[in-house]
Amino acid sequence: MADQEETEATSETADAPATEATAPLPPVLERLRERVGEALLATSDYRGDLCATIAREVAMETFTWLRDDESFDMLADLTAVDYLGREPRFEMVYHLVSIDTSSRIRIKIPLSQEDVKIPTLCELWQGANWLEREAYDMYGIEFTGHPDLTRIYLYEEFEGHPLRKDYPKEKRQPLIGPGAIVRSEEVG
Image (cartoon, rainbow, N blue to C red; front, side):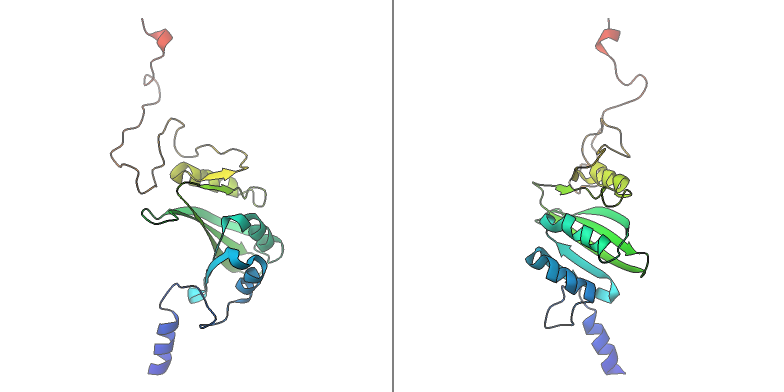
């Protein structure tokens, strides 16, 4: 019993990429590795949660393949993570679900601070529209090809992106609303 507990503990201690020295990759991650090669930066199946980190250059190819060939037909969520002080600073995180098999996979894509652009997924999943607008509004991630990349929570005059870790919490924003803006033709 103690040996079994020790084995379980050591196999689940880190969220590290699977390697040849550890367990073989789950089938979908193995097929992804065969498909994108070196663009697959890391994998994990920690506690059964499938996760792959891929290069931005293969994003559309990967998402199209996951939807069409692997039956991940639902984009459940997407968000960004800000790792201030690390390069690449940002990471896009996508959660996909297969309705048929009840499988889930998380896809991560690192983005540098100097280039926070990534292709939109609106062509693959219509629900990506508002999710991408939220990531744009809160983190400043730009989705190329998005049909309406405008703020979704904050007003257009808002300066900055409040979920970035370097956003100054005491920052004062421009006032908006009735009486807040005085037009030059109203003065005098």
